[in-house]
Amino acid sequence: MTGPDQNNGEDNGLDIRIRRVDRKDLDAVIAIDAQVTGNSKPDYWNDLFDRYATRRLNERFFVVAEPVNAGDGPSILGYLIGEIRTWEFGSEPCGWIFAFAVDPAARLQRIGERMFQNMSDEFRQAGVNTMRTMVLRHEPLPMGFFRSEGMVAGPYIQLEKDLND
Ligand SMILES: CC(C)(COP(=O)(O)OP(=O)(O)OC[C@H]1O[C@@H](n2cnc3c(N)ncnc32)[C@H](O)[C@@H]1OP(=O)(O)O)[C@@H](O)C(=O)NCCC(=O)NCCS
Image 1 (tube, rainbow, N blue to C red):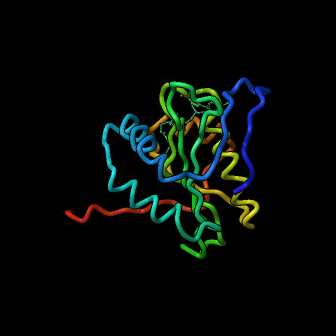
Image 2 (cartoon, rainbow, N blue to C red):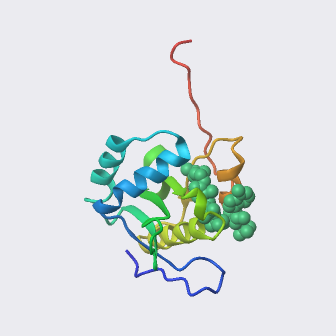
């Protein structure tokens, strides 16, 4: 992981640090996810922690945004997981991001952007030049965010089939 991602206030964001997740952060991560999705899934997050925060850390990045001065407020304000995947679908190695959220009370303060940029740096330093993700076509919030960060439609289309048809 690159060093602490300190914000000195030049973009009016909060003073936060982007760092690797620790097991003690999991409750806060689970709580943000539950608030965002309406569904608390501790087993899922414990499994994600084991898979993305304990091994193959040169290609798996599970980061959190931590306020530098949390005080009585939340200990974690957001999370992002990314992974370098190699040769799937005939693709050169590229970085995929998924499981991404900012505490609703802390949005629009560049926390999502800082985690996104931190992940971009990690991928670049690991030698990949492309970052990918998937969004629901008609969901304006993630679409607006990712477009703001410079993401555009990629060369693949997703195919699926209803297995009950
Ligand atoms: C998407 C999300 C992570 C953005 O986090 P955030 O910290 O509020 O975003 P930032 O403050 O870093 O915003 C960065 C850019 O995205 C844009 N953006 C963020 N939220 C937006 C919104 N609601 N509408 C339009 N643009 C938005 C900002 O305007 C900014 O763009 P700019 O540079 O052109 O001004 C957050 O809204 C979230 O957790 N959403 C719910 C979960 C989700 O959608 N996850 C992503 C898909 S898995």
